[in-house]
Length: 399
Image (cartoon, rainbow, N blue to C red; front, side, top):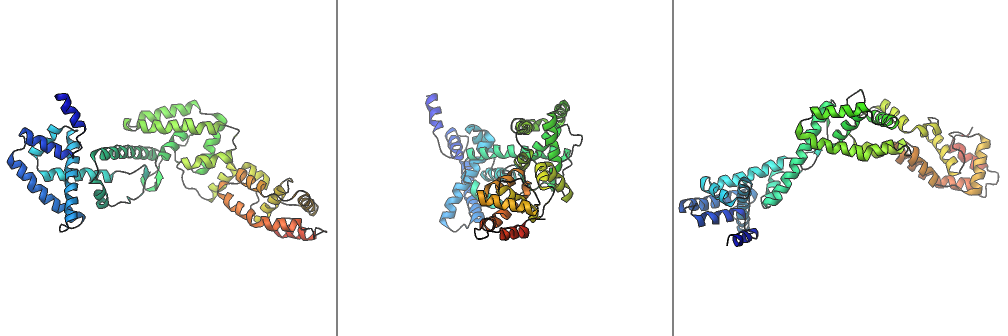
């Protein structure tokens, strides 16, 4: 008979309050006076909830309020008792019905106050009232699932703030970011064995990547990671270990792969890390470090005419130069007349070598000029090449 009762309990989908109440009535734990008090408190609580979420005078609001108060009491009882119906019954005996309703509401308010994810510095979009309206009708299982997720997110945020403090980064300077990136940055910084333990800017980040690429992960880096974990509060170990594994399994193999150009790798890695803002002088260092080949080809030229000269050369499948003599310009024109002007090699060059923050603008510049250049350089009526040369002089550097 006991086994049959246990099997029936598994399929009992009544609200937890109703199960505890029925158990209390059946066992005599809840006497007539307590039952009367529960009924009185229930009616009073329904009106209060109906007024809070709508109005007490509309029947649908009262019906919904009944469902809400039962759900709130059930939530508190199941969370408090751990699913033990007899323990929940004793709580109904010893405490008022409204206190259980308030207890359920407080559980939801604490849930609302916890982070929805691991982003930091983002204002909560949903108001507390709206959140309570949604969650006061959800099940205990849904509450537990959300609670566990938010507790994990809160732990990650707290761990990231610990690492941020070690990098000299105040919480006020962290805004709208996934905080895992802060931990990831600290891990890579320590693994590199860098003497400076502070938040890197993009130029510093490139230097860190270059150091690891040249020297690998030094023994000093491993020792520093070990010291970090010694100082790290035990509650944060799992979070930090997770981010360290990401660096080791996902990032280090890419960094150490010398077949992948640095200027192509940095734009892939940079969004995964939290980097300090930098000024124009830092940007110059960053672009130089990332785009050594770009600097070599362009000769440091950044004006449109010099860049278009290089683009036309590439499109004509001739050696790229930021300036042409008249003879070289005529040679480019004749090459275009023979083989055509190709758009794609220039776009591929931009994507492979140009500083990442300039790529969209450079591609737009080439797209804007390409059709006009093709018409001017391949015009069969221009037998002397003078018109084509005039176009190059106007848009490129021809000396």
